[in-house]
Image (cartoon, rainbow over the protein chains, first blue to last red):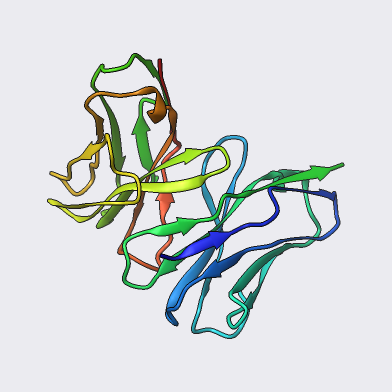
Length: 114
Length: 113
């Protein structure tokens, strides 16, 4: 079964600085999708960014970008110019193409210090 | 407004008292799913539905039931809740399985005494 590992239960960053959250996954498949979801204190799950495994180019969404290393099965999230509103739990998720579920990591709690 | 709604948002109940958590989406999505979130465990899938009348078990289905009689609704039923079902529950939907963004409801905080 596919597994997703987030090795950093908690991280902190100073406002305006850059932080990278780690995610690794285990799969024998070549076609899949990866996601980062954000869960602020409101508990709402919000999609931050997604990556198709067949694309070599790393996805970017404004201040959020990923470093996708397919051979290493690594999918880290970089947040640039961190803002107070970025404080949240961040979940990495794996979606096997054609499967019926997202497999989530256990999450990383990000604190942004003013 | 496109959204997934869940009710109730908070519920405290006692062991053995049947309850239903409703989930409804207004986006005409085919795929719907239920997750539970527990500290240190992330989100785990309980049940999912590929379309009307098509449901299947996820990773942690024990103690739960679901039904999908209409495309928009996907209720989660706990027929005899137990304290180990105390958790935060999320309903999610997406246009189809895979790749498409899953839209999550606001969550239901359930406490079983």
